[in-house]
Image 1 (cartoon, rainbow, N blue to C red):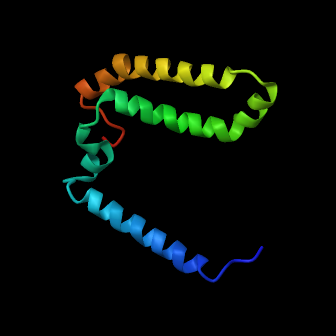
Image 2 (tube, rainbow, N blue to C red):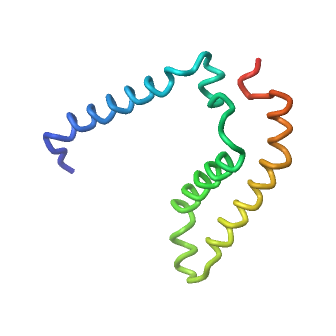
Length: 107
């Protein structure tokens, strides 16, 4: 496999842009805890959708070829189950964590 001459400059430029964006987005954070928890400003449903999207992406890479070969809609049932389960988790359990001001960054 041959690497083109523009691959390295493009990769470095992308990494540099990503780093600049990270520093710019962290500028409003007062502490590392504030940065990692997002200032506790995200609504619970946004967190639930973020977790479901991550799980679905992982499931897509690992299991979608086998599921699609079977020709049924099991994959969609799993995604909707994730949505319902994560919504219930965020509404019932995570709310207690936020109320108690608990975070995994607490020593």
